[in-house]
Amino acid sequence: MSSNVSAEIIELNFAYDKRPVLQGINMRFPKGKLIAIMGLSGCGKTTLLRHIGGALKPTKGCVKVAGQVIHELDSAGLYAMRRKMGMLFQFGALFTDMSVYDNVAFQMREHTELPEELIHDLVMMKLNAVGLRGTQNLMPAELSGGMARRVALARTVALDPMLIMYDEPFAGLDPISLTVVGNLIRSLNDALGATSIIVTHDIQESLKIVDYVYFMSNGVIEAEGTPEEIRASSKEFVHQFVHGEMDGPVPFHYPGGDYRQDLNLG
Amino acid sequence: MPVAKTIKGIGNRVINAVWRIGMATRFFFLTLLYSGSSFRRFHLIIKELFSTGVMSLIIIIVAGLFVGMVLGLQGYETLKRYGSESALGVMVALGLVRELGPVVAALLFASRAGSAMTAEIGLMKATEQISAMEMMAVNPIARIIAPRFWAGVISMPLLAALFSAVGIFGGYFVGVVQIGVDEGSFWSQMQAAVDFREDILNGVIKSLVFGVAVTVIALYEGYDAPPTAEGVSGATTRTVVTSSLVILMLDFVLTAMMFGGK
Image (cartoon, rainbow over all chains, first blue to last red; front, top):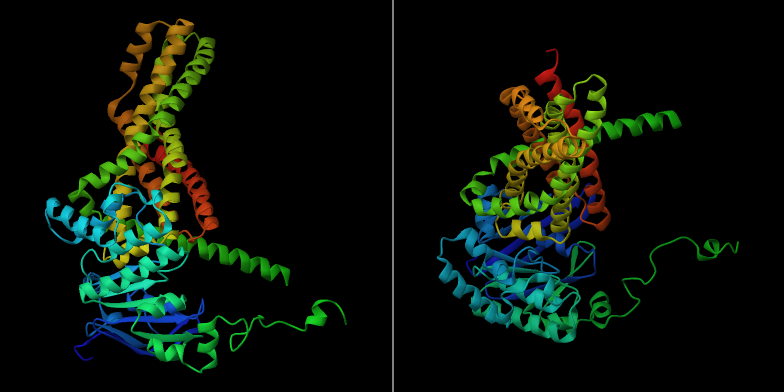
């Protein structure tokens, strides 16, 4: 793996029991880039992200982060690697028994010996970066969906990770929050000099901010390219996905028996 | 074949039950293994002591008072037949310290604190808080489970002792204040007959064992709950049912070991 690549997926295969979920996936995530992995719900995007985080072991192939094969790391090695990573979960996954301040300070207190005064300043800077300095004393239940996602973003980048993963960061957001979160993902990635991987099916918002896109369907990569290439793609699957068409390679109807028979028409 | 299907079904349930017992045992040992950081950061245990112990105080005190009052009333009615009303204090105290204190307090603890622990951990899992913690390189067993476990183990004997103390006061209120049993004999016979090691220490040991059992069951059920609304509600129900049965079963075993055949 060359030094300008943060993470790499090589011939990755994974199956739940005997049902294949990922088949022969190859991806590269160069340093400083923001890369989207798109596809329909259930196509294996989140499973892929779980492999990068070391939560799942591949049946074949491997994931390399900072030159190290993730599934070969022991428990201590994996935890050391995860300190270099950040992950934003679909609905934020804020700790509901802690205030906004304590959520953002959580990793600093767990992994560093920093004095509380310094932690305070760092938390304020992180919250300020997402525009929510004034929410420090609120509890997660008092935040709107968009605010919770931004606080989770501040928590994700608390220790300045080199690799940031986003699992459906735009799900369930109103248009303003969507733009705010999208811009924050881009600006934080550039400010930290990190590499970001966004798993999403929100095509319009992600094409505005990412550098490269991988399209997945049924566990394989269907297409890849820059946002311009994706918009101009003549591939049927990509065209249907980008334009949100009802029918195409992804059929409207789930496979079933004869319709006339189901209606008892003989 | 319906018979074969039934046998297969029973077999599957037995295998599943044995599997769960094994996993819960492994979970218990992992909790012990990762308990070090909880004691280094004792404020984590203190925070949980508040939600498991302090928040259970009302139910324990009220229940203890009424159980003691019933004991006083029933005990008086029985002892009166043999002209032994003066032994009411002994009967109330031994009944509470040896049996009812640890057992009823543990049953109440399972319903109040155990169910809350399961629901909280289950919901943390369903809302990906536990996964988030793992991704932050923080071991959830060390950070979430161990402090709750030790809070449960510490709270249980204290709650049982409080239950017994309040219960004795309930018995005193009914027996001495209301019915008119002699106050001197109520207390002096109790003082003479209740042995510290035989009765009080054994009661404390019982409540400690119940505390470990209830807390492990509650935490394991929450940690193992399917991450859905139905999964968490099922796990909460299982915590109360399993804990109650385990408390009663352990009570018999411990009573047989402590007092059996003497």
